[in-house]
Length: 380
Image (cartoon, rainbow, N blue to C red; front, top):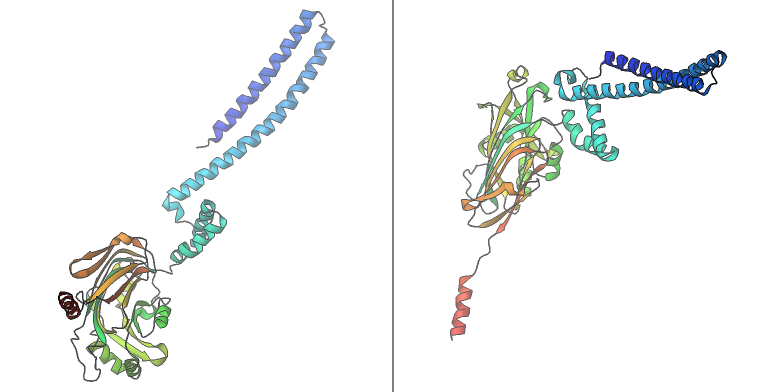
């Protein structure tokens, strides 16, 4: 590290050395005049005056240049030391305001990648995280199972086996709510009859789960005619919806409105989360729902930064062929288990809007009677 005492000592030594060198040159000049026989006291006096003038001007110029050089070097050295301390020592970084920290990250990114690319990377990927737009989750487990058997036939909501699959879902994850902007400790789940409505819910922080409910127009009209109380009955009796917070089941209210093209479930979390700011809380959702067979896809989206993702998808393997299309950067995370169960396992961070689309089609069937008839004709 730069030492001010050493700097002054070095500057003094160089000045003395320069003066001694010039004094030796003066003595050599005097000896030369004596040796050549041109020595006079008047000439010596003039030579000394000229030599002093000759020494002082270069010495002053040298001191100015040397001082400027050493100060520039000193400033760079101090800047490097400050920057190194800011990067390495967290206790120094914590003293700065959040805006100063963000500005430092933005300028550093622009310095590494260039102004255009650096600002693009900062505004699109870094800024949402630094501004607490996203919340972080861990141990995301999502299990989806398709079947043709409908376990419940409601007397006021008839489900046709031929038109619908029955889908069971179980979702769980851990989440820190310290930076979560929850109004009155209330969070929501949204079900939508259209993808356009579902996409809008991804921009609303209090909706921690969204799902498409694919039903025909007749059932959409019926569901939209329900009162909030009738919709609550549908959620409880048909969907068999259950939400657990830290392994404790939380009651909910239901809002149904034609304008929202779906229905919302609202949950009031315990006041305990206001105290436990640095604690991860466990979320768990279990439900079942009808889905039109004509919708031959299922989309599993990671809506928030998530560490460790585990997805299991099962369908009627005797009747359909399922293909998983990932839209995250790890295709090798997908594997097939017995009975055509598809498993997605990622043991690292996954960015928002990543996920996987499961698509399927009916298995090709060979009509045996026609094959046997053609064989008999050939033999004849």
